[in-house]
Length: 595
Image (cartoon, rainbow, N blue to C red; front, side):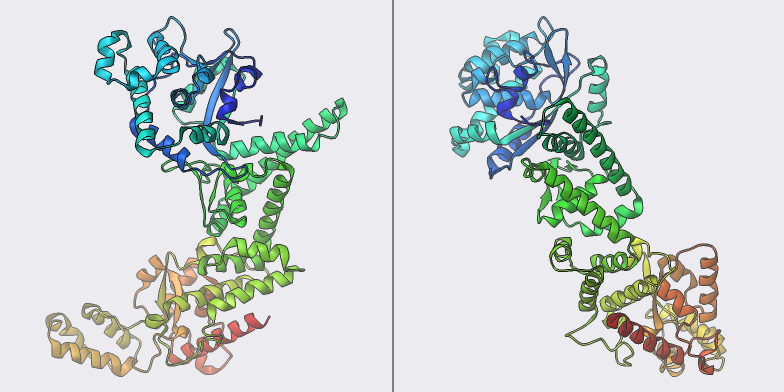
């Protein structure tokens, strides 16, 4: 038997070959503090259908999740503090499938208790002659057996009926179903040795304060099996000590791994690498809860690189015969991902790709494992993937083209280029790493440095004031004074539009040289202010420690300034600035892809 996972056959089993007999216990006892049996029809049918739909293949199995057991030394039984509903349902199902002797007397309530009648019903009706109750209904049954008129017995009666109805209705082969149930359905048996805290354990489990997560199982498998596999060479005392030392060391290593994955910035970065989900215990209840157990991020990524559609216990159990290899693979993945995270260029290239492309970790990992010989080769591979996201039809987008309306027609490509420019500047030495959120547009607007002509008529008044304030035209007081009273007049609207076009028509407003990504709240607060006001507001934010995208900052401090006098005006933003910035972007990208 394995250390935590047991087949249904092993849980009940033959007289001398089951979990009970190996632990020298008589039966599974349901303590009185437990509620009575209360599985409803939907729960019974879901269990039946899930097992039926499961297709055994090699080491694959269907997991019924955990039962928590506490040894009762006084009466030589296992007290079931969690999982009694599943165990009891299995007794009813196995009895129906003809394995009455298999389960008889193995799940019981305390004798001479308020559930004495439930005991009798399970062990004298269900496991003796359940055919009797299949031929009657509840009302007739309790009329004949008034002592059995209890709520939990009603649910047991109903479960038996529903099992029969389901098998008959779906014409299920009982022999094949039984074979699958006994050999390919497993239960996590979590045995706790300290029975003095039994009711507290039950209370904690019942209130879900200490749920058993899939990572707990993986940890137990690794700590016990890896040490055992390494220690199979000898059975002497020296080797036993070595095995125990190895178990402690594995525990430390797993704790260290979990601590690293508990870092918020690590989880936020790698969650984009994950395209699969955890298996579920029940609808909406994940087996591997990555929000509570950080190491589950690593396990999800491990399943991801192996091409799994979801992270399941059966996937982990595929390595049952060589857990040491599984552990070494996990360690290798962890150390590699940690290495990528700490490498400035790899961190930014992968961050860009997993946010801005459909790249899968499985493909990246296969290339890393099989096709590269140096770290620089890997970086070149990543840059090739990035280039494919920026190029169109094998030709570089003409960044400085006067004909491209980036804001209205090329927003997707625009965002990719602006993010890549942030990546470019962040890969330079002594620059801070980009926060994970910066690999996407999320939380940022596409900002026009020279303000865009508003589409809404009501917003054009402020734009006219902006034009006049920045001396792009002679003051037109009448246009402003009459604006509110004539806003609905079509001739007046035409006059407004003609005025705006006359003084801004030559400005390349939607050129890439006039566009940056700016924090959405900051963008809306500065509105149609002139360049100098916007620049001052951004500098003030930086001085207060607010994150600013590297490219946005570079643009506002005029990184493209070649020293020519026409680019020395720090008050206004002109066509010359827009053209110079567009050309600088084109040069930067060309340099990046040639490196």
